[in-house]
Image (cartoon, rainbow, N blue to C red; front, side, top):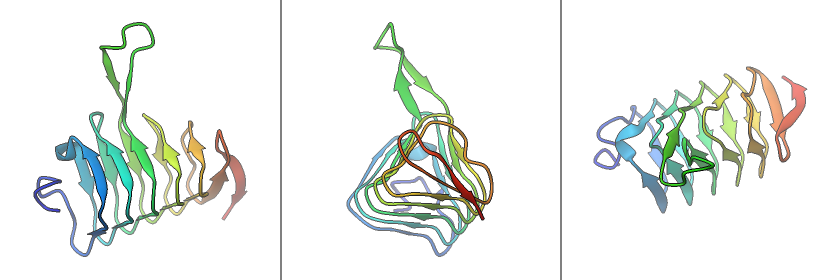
Length: 132
């Protein structure tokens, strides 16, 4: 794991294989993070996972995309998962998104806008379910 992420993994973190990572050197994982199996990290734009985050199985963290008109051009925007958030199984986090501290993204959600701190979002596109 240390080799895959170029040493950018905090103490006590666990990543369960299999895992697909593109540009692992652009991923930073904090302390006490859990990433479950079958996750996909498209990290050309950078992915930061802060301390105490839980990422369930089959989650996609996507920090890059292709230009609408010239598909050869890669567009990149960082993804940030703030402290103590929980990303539910099968959720997709799109480029440029920040998921707020202590927030929950429901299983299967597609997150197209930033998630505020202390909230629960779900659906496609993800919408506010409640504040916590």
